[in-house]
Image (cartoon, rainbow, N blue to C red):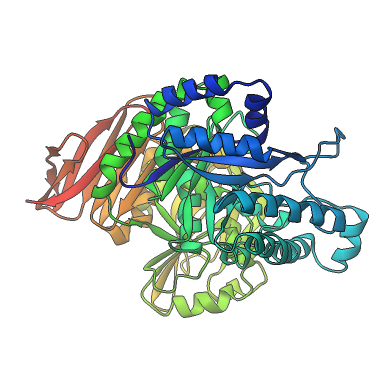
Length: 574
């Protein structure tokens, strides 16, 4: 049983393969593979040749390939470029030193060995460096660590990894996996701008797991966001998404969510890490993943191409790191790109966009059109005294305000309505020029209001500044009226509004298909307001129809979504 609209794979790492071989567990592995493939459509296994300074023997790899072939499973190679652990506290990761000639000779041997055995292999996301040895310090000279490392890893990619692989096997396809920590690629040497185009393909880390109890704290929306970012970095060159079952036993929904979010981004392939982990402790995840794969495979032909609010994240950029993930959990659908999207009707910029040295001149050109520009307070702060004051008269101060009372929208000189959050939320205080700028959403406290959403104009366009709280997670605590207003602003180009309790995510496609994903631990009540009074919604899972109520010439659809479930809805004209 195989999927029709995407491929599926499992990664099998070196320690696990060697354990099978050393303990002669071939029959055991064969039994488990049969069990897994009977419950989940697995088309490929990536067999790792090297990790942690250790190889898998050629004899063992050939036997593994034969076993996979017997089970009608394709094979490809895998490499993790880590060296022998030294057990020193300072060794955060045992990555190679790419300034060390001996380490470079080891890497040559690893890639040549792998290319001899496979016509395609993927490099796991340990192809980075955090080394600050004497050789690296000497080589860095006056460069920043990010500059030195991205230049160094590009050279190693081109002159060693790819060159040596092709010398052994001219037909080999070398694929690099980029990790989920996209905001810090450059600090560790990942050169997405140039190196990604040297390889035959790229792969995307979409692991999100538990956002609270794991060290990376990545919001689940990031599984979708990172896939779209890398897809727009190298269109059609992004080979798939890679997630794992680690730290997911607390809630099997976290396994399914990684699979769903990876594939709803229109990934070509989904890879699970890893076979050994599944066999040892996570076999219970297999039927869950099997269901998710089959479910998306049925839905995929009904989904168009992903669309969303354009957001520009330049190459080698950081700032307000992973904020997009938190905003995506509020129901704001993003379409990220490392190239400035001059054609976008609405553009959303976080502080990472301030890393573009030419951002002001680009914004001036952009705002000549009739556009909407939404800036975060972090972007405004990062651009202080860098030319932004030519566009807007708004400043981010070092002072803070905490409040749980909010005014939303305008009614004469007051607010249209008021809302309360369950607890106070802390924001930076913004200063602005009254009447040049309007305070559209405000936090209210001590007989004074403080801006949460400011609106001003430049040339033919509207410019908004969204004040981001100190703690991104508290965004979900904002009152629904506040979140609804922000979502309405972001979604105005799509002629729809989405209301409901956070956290939830919205995914849009260019064939008028909408997915709403409820991440709350309870049933959520949602509404879609569509600027079309002659339509209905088709639930593509059940093939049933939802009718709406006409309010102010717009169609309002109300429905419920179960906890950790999603609805796939298509707008259909009457």
